[in-house]
Length: 155
Length: 155
Image 1: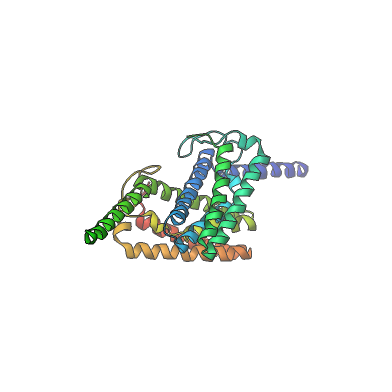
Image 2: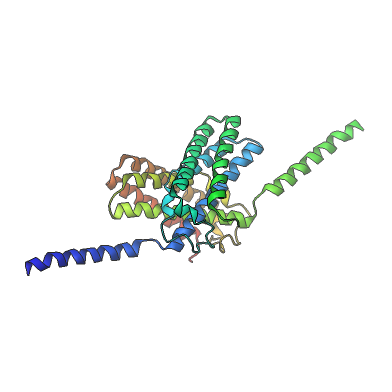
């Protein structure tokens, strides 16, 4: 009997753990909604920096926006692209291309570039050097565009 | 003639500036979409910290999530509540209560508490002290709930 109890307990524990995980694991639609939201927040902050770069420079505004972009870039966005979210609807149908899930080396490299340029922009923003921010902002924008070209379907 | 030119130029300049602003100013629907997205990104990161606090603690995960929350909290979210966005549809109809736009003292105080507790959580997260993170996370959650109770309609 004792020999049977241990495996049985193990199975029960595993089942309980799986049930807990199933309860807690966010649904694909929720994950897609989160990632669509991430890009909206990035777009908002991108626009704030653009307004400073193209118009009257506001050092504090640029710092706040650049820090938000950098913190989001460093937050581990890869977690928002698990298997099972290749298609589906969050706020709307996802526009991700299948290549993001298959060409993981290329996707990882794109993500690393985004992190690098976001960190650089946040660093430069802190100095208040508008000309340097313009350069760093341009480089960051290029990483956005590159990733969109490769991994995002046209709207 | 010369006396007339200056005021005329001033008027033209003002008109041009207004036109530029009108072109660049985001529409209310876009602003509402941005702020709805902000709360989704906060919810995502909140869930990541909760998973660590309630389950197996992952220091790096908590740091990344706490830094994202703090950077967003410090990014100047008040800018996402301009006049004209009391009602309207972003991703969906806004759930903001009119009080946020009328009781600005209370709304400002709620925002300041959110910033304070977000910064505290990010500071504590960096130490990796799971028990201290649990306390700070609880305090941050209370500021979220307080603001929702006062300024957000029930879904």
